[in-house]
Image (cartoon, rainbow, N blue to C red; front, side):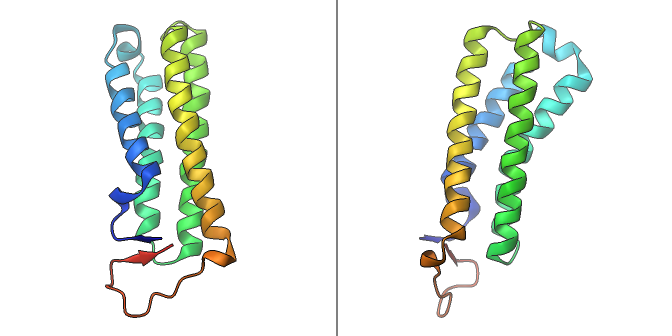
Length: 136
């Protein structure tokens, strides 16, 4: 698999959409006024996509996997925050289920990518490739 820029990564694309949804969600009246909670939810949701991007350009497969693990961890944080948002009435059951399902999809994409990168059968040579193109 050859990827030339982080925005080609499926888990990054999905986490970008998800972060935008979280931004829209936090503009609702209850969440908008809880500045600490809102800030934590926004930061964690943006961290999912940011770690994928930063890891892609980190310079090594090992480092990339580490960043993907951080991204996965951020998705767990967001998931935990969504549970409390539902429990205290900031979001409805329908909103919770929709967001949680999207988050589970992202988590599966990240987890699958980590497994793919860890598989020694997927080793690729980077010889004769453009500097910004990475083979994974």
